[in-house]
Image 1 (cartoon, rainbow over the protein chains, first blue to last red):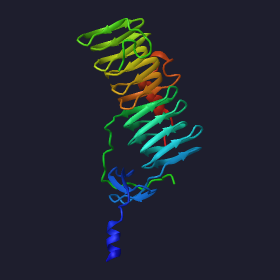
Image 2: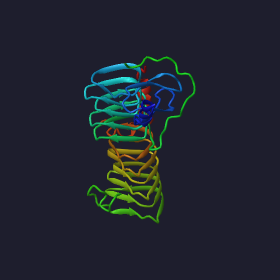
Image 3: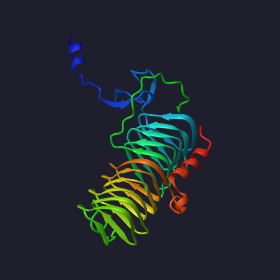
Image 4: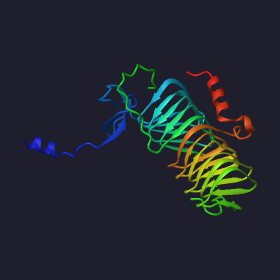
Length: 151
Length: 138
């Protein structure tokens, strides 16, 4: 009984809310989680931050964390992230629930949806941009096709 | 907030006041600050600033453009476009440099880079998108 009581009194693990990168529905996850399965679409959602240091060409790069593209790196992919920092290059459409920061030598070629865009002078942009502080991706209930993903 | 000096040390010799509405084509040499409403077309080699209460419904071709207010129209800058935190822009951007502050809202095609502003009239976003579409995609 005493054990049960102490278990009840134990502090609840800290959680945070992220959007599933597949169905865009909200999920509560442990603060320290690196990846979880979405309780809505049951697909694996990567939470961890990814640093791209070289050339990466994939169909889709998705994480509920941050993606950093370093100076000499390049991504060729459809990108779905929480935050994106671009010092190198990105070729493909980008959706960021949070902010996109493009450094002075960074470039993006593709359509972009995000809440906040920070562009340093010298950056290269080409595509259709929708920068809206209230932007939230539309949740989808459709089955997501199996995709070639990073990691 | 754009001050009278334009925030860049540029004195604006022309100011469209906050109770003024201007319709038509506007040409000037140095700089203009829009506190009121402007509809039509603006052409200049100098600076254009749209202050927080300013509303612009125009296609703009300028050297530098600073937006703090609302703009509906295409912006073409030979040097720099700056969208500050209260800026709301619906339209295309062609510029050599772009600065977007946190909180700014923008919807439209964007063509930014050292070559974008220099190619003059041919560097419309529509043309650039055609070039982009011509590139092999995944």
